[in-house]
Length: 602
Ligand code: G6P
Image 1 (cartoon, rainbow, N blue to C red):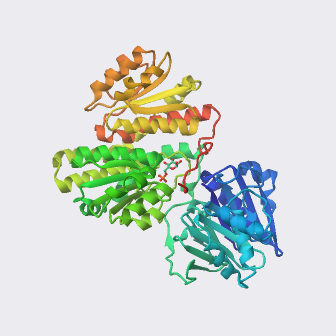
Image 2 (cartoon, rainbow, N blue to C red):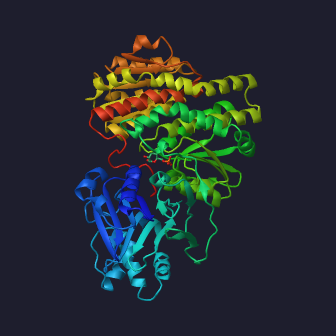
Image 3 (cartoon, helix red, strand yellow):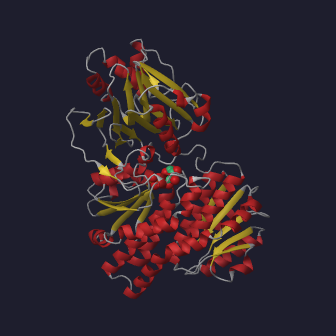
């Protein structure tokens, strides 16, 4: 969505802000803006474009002042242009705001403010907030009171950073349904949409909850309830993420670095959950009605989760895209229901809405989350962390394979508890799961071959990814990766569906990527591959069976693993293929057009 950051301390604020915005760019990158205060005046620079371009063009690092806020935008209201870039100010030019989220009642508020004579400069919903506070200042002497009064009139989602020239010692930050974290330094304070923004300066953080605001000076912070104004007791968390984790470390893109981090991330996911998984399994063992909800890549992890549960626990969860779940399944959710929510960020609006609905209906919610302290972790009954470390590339990679790791551990622990599968089989599976980092290393070793393949395929217009059973998820995720970052049309589908329509689109040279590990459905996959081949498709298959050589143009020979574990390793070549195609086509894989890492609007 958007990224916001604020700084108050003894450093040159613009340096900290621009540096932080760079780390938040994954949240949005169509416009950038910075405001600092010096000598009782606001200094604002903003424009459409990416930070690296604007840093020079607008001389963002030459702004005076030791307190300020900044914004990187992913447009919702108003096209991405210089005027709509944040920050936005009131008529007096003394209040500046940066905002992540959407103000749902902004039109009605704007109308009212226009009638009172306020002059608007942009088409954004955010500008309304600055004028609303200005208006409230007529009735309240104290800025904080005016702020509260104005903010309580807003409907929608917002994380805000607010600076007011006359209130020299403070910055204000507000959270409602959009993420915001305070960073506690020594003689300096930070706030941002996400921790990596200020990770070079501090690892002490305070997570704001919905309906809270923070009043921050360089030496202190107070968090209060927006409705009552009462001070809230907040815990300072020390997080274990390091700066190194949030930097590229010599890789040309975060995405490539994160693809290569998978062996380590999977290891962390295994060891990070080894001690807690049995307890969680015990707590959910008796639920028969299970929904798994998620969006995007996490939704594909949910599909793998479904197969794991079916095969190992003999339970058949319903997998639903969280945005659909809310509207279609409300009546089916009750206190006998378990909802498993999967979300990297823990902030995806649709997934949070699904969790809230489940809680309201009395269901038990288990969330599988990467970002520690994120909203999903705070509103769920149980949480399992993926321990993947910060993921900056917009397209999810290591958080997907760690989600799969955690889901596999959970299914094994449940099966053991329920005695639905032989203990010996479970032990073998577990042993292989522990070997997964090694298998993923093998798959990463194919990078040069895949790069060469990407060179061959870079002019192709359409791709089809097919798979059966648990590999259907790999086909869907492989196609999603390609769409997201290379902008090539790609469809992921069950191989059995091919002849019910999509086969009509296969002609000479159309790439069909067949995800074909040995297992229950391998023979059927072979037939489906042949059907495509007979229509001229260029077959690229991934598998461990020699037979594939006979029907494929290119085989990516995969390590032999149990079919239910194959999604963890089979997705790796497909991530690399999407990455190299994106780079060869001149795209920035870390910042795909029109997309954002964390979608905090529904
Ligand atoms: C966005 C991102 C995807 C991600 C999805 C769900 O669309 O671009 O990479 O899979 O959101 O995000 P979550 O944080 O809930 O896993």
